[in-house]
Length: 388
Image (cartoon, rainbow, N blue to C red):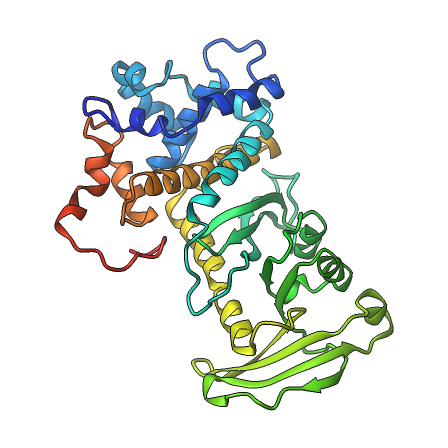
């Protein structure tokens, strides 16, 4: 990156505008636009996420204050809050959703060789879960949640190699988590890790038919018979049992007629027995427990985006505006992950965002900002994506 360019302008070079314009054309996003096209809308919302602006008014105020720099920043012109708000309300959010999915396909392979702690397998491994954003039902009447409140759910399938999302779905708060299993396109031989909210034997059997593995917490009310037990386990590792089972319930057995595996593990930190259900009969019982332990990465991911991106405070009230907001936030995360990989920076994404948030109007080389300090350090271990 050349010095003399603003940091925001340098960042925009990592964004494939040609691909973005494909989706704009597909949805006719720039039809009858005057002062604010879809690209400039995206840049301004991207700026808002980078600099943690709490509202559209904040975004517009900051850009207006730096109006003499906007051309060099790559922004055609500043607009007022109303214009930006109308664009979020009216322009099809699928422009940003499809572009976000394009970035996912571009960024995921960059982290495909990342290790998974305490696991030595070649399979692709994903964690599936959702996070909920509580809302006012009066303002967001399209998004009902529990207990007469409004809510939006962000359903996420996270690739544990690099903590890059591979699938995201935004729904209202009443959408049941297990319904996502009917939408996913499973990858053969991949392992999907989920909590007990996703126990839907019909959907899980469909995963089995497609040659996919799953690991979940077992429900305490599950009725089953033990077919075979593995007595050759080392209890010093925390394992308590490893069994092959089949379901007893009439309906459950109809939905899932094949054998399953039940692994019991003692969590010494919390002094509880955890029971895992899986259709994978090949990996060791300890690997089943270690794989499920890595599910915490998706909880960290949700906590991270809520703390470091503008997610909990939404910039619009309509379903279209909320989807646009969330997908621009996800795009921001993916773009920063792409920058991190391209520059081979040992900084975490959190650290990169903190630096970028106060440097967008600087003319320092982005490589100097994010990698210069490494020349004086001997970095022996690769840092976790989220570590401070």
